[in-house]
Each structure stands twice: as C-alpha cells, then as structure tokens.
Image (cartoon, rainbow, N blue to C red; front, side, top):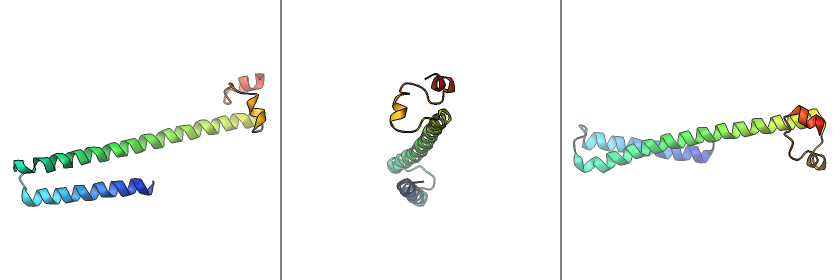
Length: 105
C-alpha cells in the first residue's frame, strides 16, 4: 500500500475519532440541532473513506488484470519464438495469446 494512501486514511480516522469524541462530550443524546453540520460532515467523511477504499480496490484489481494480460501476451511471444523489438512489428494486429494466429503469421 502506498504511504500517501495510508496517510490519507490515517487522517480520516483521526478526524472521525475527534468528531465522535466531540459529539459524545457535548451532545451524547444526539439531539442538539446546532451540531447537525458536524454530524453531516462526519457522515460525509465516513462515506468518502469507504469510497476511497473502493477506488483503491478497483485500481488494484485493474492493475492485476493488466499484469495478467501482459504476462499472457509475453508467454505467447515466447511460445511463438518471436524475439522482442523489430520482429514483433511483423505481428502487429495479431493477438499474442492466440497460438493459431501467431503460427499462421
């Protein structure tokens, strides 16, 4: 995990804790209408934290899929015996994971 991500999440957690402590001290029953904005900000912060985590998970999954696709393509190049560089230009437009197409080319 990146240190930026961890820093942002730690900041969110700290702010959430401070808001929870403030609200429990000054309005334990949750009835003071003047603190409604604080409650709304707290709820928004919780949503944002969940959204950040969802985005992170989606990004990790996307990168993983891209890496798998790249590995499969590289394996296709190796199976076909095609070295890197200019030789691969001859196979432009051919799916490197399609053994029949690579062999036909």
